[in-house]
Length: 72
Image 1 (cartoon, helix red, strand yellow):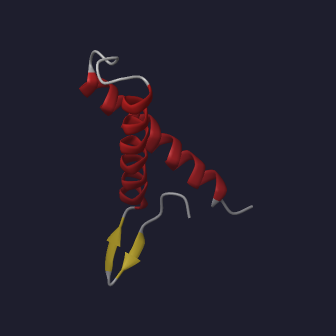
Image 2: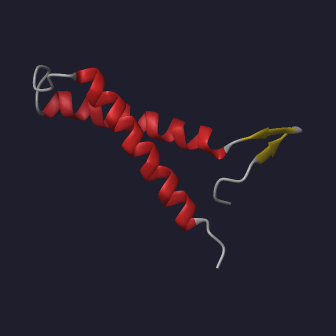
């Protein structure tokens, strides 16, 4: 599958949208766990941390799905 378009009702959607949603949910989960374990004031630049975590998790999700769904 990789990054090929998915046809849904005649509309082509990018799988990157699904990967970004998975990255967003993972970011919310990890951020909540960190606030619970480490504390609320442990992160100085929370916005930068959130964006960085989202980009890293979305890239990791894209890589994992691309490798797993790649045809031999």
